[in-house]
Length: 102
Image (cartoon, rainbow, N blue to C red; front, side, top):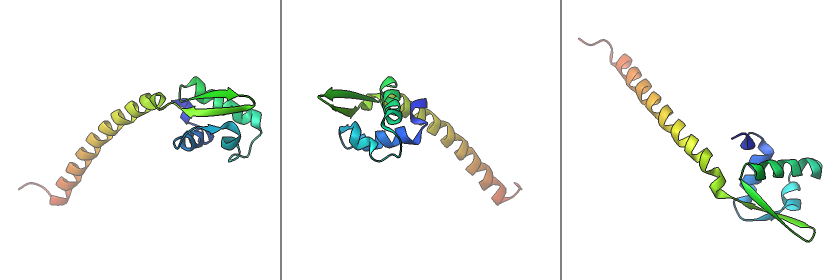
């Protein structure tokens, strides 16, 4: 998921894990102009990772945990694939360490 490729967007997701926050609070941790930061928020919204709600002049962001499901599924598949490869590597190294069969 390309939305999580950027460290700023990953930091936003991490910050929202503890609950909703206004954009101003999220942006204060990043050294960029607000319009640039809002592009990151829009990217995360398009990816389904967060929603935002405007009340008066305050836009509050809410994490959408279901949006992380594709990432979790991909990670689980990769973990199974790597675990199998690492098990085979461990068996091979063990065989080398024990030496040739007699």
